[in-house]
Length: 489
Image (tube, rainbow, N blue to C red):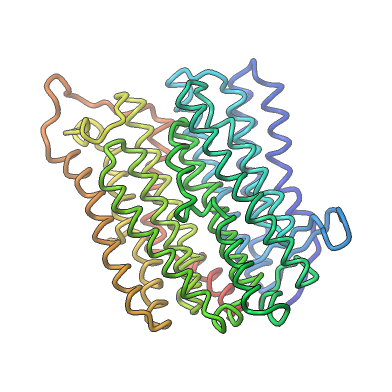
């Protein structure tokens, strides 16, 4: 594989870091402050897009930044998997920035300068995670994401926000220190390197028992993937403003979590090693448990954001399940679902925020007839919900189809049952919201259009349209997924 040495990955990381400073010094001038946010978002996406043709030619881009200790380098490597996350995060940051400006201004939120500074910092760390050349670099940026999103979760600064933020920090930092860091240390001890490799780096380095221990430590340590029992940070973080929820669930935090799982499974352990000792199957069943359990819990949530949070926990484990199958279709599904889930779920969270801006309603039981008052908003919700359920013509069916093929290739009938059951559960907790919104009478006195401001409604409309476009034109993410499959299988 041809390697292209370029500093563009570094620039893609640094552009939003520079924006943090510019946003900070422009705090007294809101229009200028928000301009820096949008300029940085557009520039970042442009830089990522400029690397895409090189990756599609089958090449990789590398850039070595610094050696911390012998064998511990901060280095960047852009490949098909990394650019999938980078394209998704950088594009959706543009729409999320527009949405956040409209949301924060409509509600006259306090500390908006701090909010946008840490928002930009989190995106810088997400880009660093996507382009990491080794697990050490990925770990550094993974932790920066945790620290930079803590002030966003605690933004409201009331008792609930501070309590939720403390739980958020405790889960994510605690699992990293007690599980992920030891896993990385053991990897270096046995493999002698931390660099990602297409066939993994642990084959033949230790006994099966030791390999299994390292694998469990990794899976327990990557709490951002939302697998049970280390998932409670995610619903706790729903005390944050809705743009933060969108950031957590679609653009940065959880996507970096499942991305890290894919990196570890394919590029630290490798398909052959995990298939040989059967660890992939164990992970698949563990992810299946999370899928079903989180869906059942979602059914019981009346708070819309909490229902969406448990839906995210379930949907993230689709990605973990898919890569754990260790089959070509399963791996393809895991890569594609990073983007497809991002578009669908960010749409749903945008809708939750739009409803709150327009009506100050948080609970599903209060939303009778709201589709008649907010037809554009709830139409977008319907599109996002259908994608989560996997109903054509929206994109969720595409990645779930390949997940189903992956289960067949792995000859795991129970996984097919899980896929069917989870699809029915998805329908059970999403469709009643749609029915309530469009087919129930609104409360007395609630008549007329109440759409949120355009800066809130337009981004959610665009993400909903994107979810449909990905159904009819999944070519790019499918091509990138196939490149990952060709590299590791």
